[in-house]
Image (cartoon, rainbow, N blue to C red; front, side, top):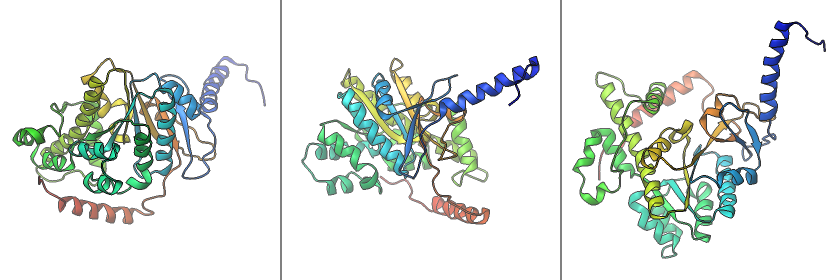
Length: 338
């Protein structure tokens, strides 16, 4: 290799060296299969650094709230969550597990299960557990039960989400006092980065409205999204206010927490002095040499590196047909009913 000596080439070499240093610092072990994951620390302006679960937990123990963003159907993502929950508990046992996957109105059901008053069948049926509960969330809940940790049913009932999506946020004013407690007292519907992100999602997906009233319908869709974020944020805040000195680990879809938006910024609105960490999933482009890009590092303070999931579609025609079916199902889906 020839040494570069001219000032211009030397400057270019410095750029190349910086890029190489980023890639080398970002290097992580290979991901041999769909149950594999790597963890990385992501700090602004610095190359990401590979961490073991133990090293990540040593850092995360210093945060009040840890948001674990997930791809709901990704096996490795769920294994990573379980490993982190176990490791963080070992270091900070005053911990609660907060979950998007259970809704506020079933908190008594969750509490009954955690204290042994009902069995798992009742938890799944009366608690309206997600369809992938057994393989994805049972280990987390059972760990919490074994160690007597609180499980926070953090989310708003889906029925209220549908009603706000159909009628708008003023629908909440029509609820009786008990049902109104199922949703956050305050919604943050202001313009900003999160609203822009959500509207771009609608425009790029099969869920965006079309036609003369598209703007109004999309605004209601955003309100229903924010209803989830604000309710989860409020649920976490209420727990921390009642349990000073405790920490919370919150499990939720990555959209709700990426780049510190969504639920994260709404928790900061309520409790600005909290120390919050976001762990977000990112796709490793090459599973044999997994790394992250500078753009990926914006998603979280820590990152789960995961293998790409199987392709949903192999052709534009197949994707278009599936999206048309989704639109039809969305139009004909459940309506507001309590």
